[in-house]
Amino acid sequence: MSMTLELKIPPVAVALLTAAGMWYTARAVPGFDVAFPGHDVVAGIVAGAGGFIAILGVVAFGRAGTTVNPMKPGSSSALVQSGIYSVTRNPMYLGVLLVLLAWAIHLAHVLTVLFLPGFVWYMNRFQIEPEERALTSLFGPEFTAYAARVRRWL
Image (tube, rainbow, N blue to C red):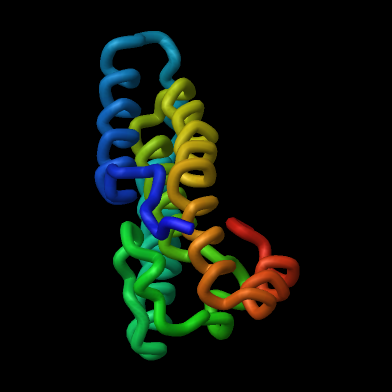
């Protein structure tokens, strides 16, 4: 089984493209504004939570001495299951999703929220599923049991 991913675009680039599409939509399609008092404060809190969750994932990988490179899951040397990984199998992607949600809140445009399910679908199909195949190949029943116990996102 090949360890290469279907996704050839790094997840950070996917997130940036998604954010750019959200910004463009907010500017190009007027009339769907949904600003509310304090929306930027809420956006800041959601972004902070997303950043914190993602950092917890990176730190856990660092402590385990395994790679954080999402393009090479076959290089994983440990299956991290503790800490934030006992709550979500993908805290880094969840963190990015929350930052994108914060961006949508900041933009205060209802159509920008429609990008979020697309981001989740794309990441599931082209990043997470190939990663999970690689982890199953590397860690076998240990990963299968972990995946049955901990949800992919939340």
